[in-house]
Length: 257
Picture 1 (cartoon, one colour):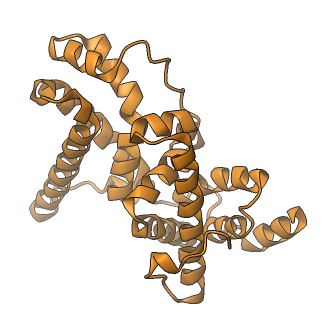
Picture 2 (picture 1 turned 60 degrees about the vertical axis):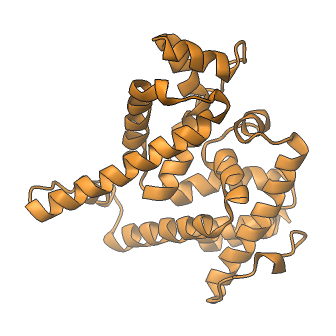
């Protein structure tokens, strides 16, 4: 199996989309799952430094206690909440905007707005849902600002600068890289939320099982089942794209394939 993987991924290079597809075809072993976890961020253009982010600290205080302290002006308490939720918010924002650098900027803006508005949280158990709504508002406002800049003709297109070829990268290679990124993003966006978020947190944000379970409020067993099912759905979707047929009925996906 390892030989098959090596030959398929070699043939797929330099397109990370098809390399990820080759990995998914053999994702029934821990080794290949690990390799896929390293390949998917590359396909999406997410820096490895982010996927290897510092793990959460031990939970000496509950989220509810930290929210209460934050509402009283305790910055240290709020910083701990940021550490606990930053990966979750990043994955959601990144999925909406599809650009790592822009997502990072918008996540910072989200937490700045959240700090100013923290007293609006009346039920601390719903902190993450509230942060999702704040992040969505920030994304929508950003899109509106971009629209106004385009109409006024004063917009500097930094995304175009970021999209310039890297040293030694030809324009066709750059175009292929961007096409791969958009295709993998499209596959992720097509998945149901309950499977998409665990996959994003595990393979894009690099979170461990305990952290993901705590973030999403699910047991370790349920999480592993969702990851397995989500990868099976993603495999079917990616293979369907390769053959030009998109999988519409998620119930038709066999997770044992």
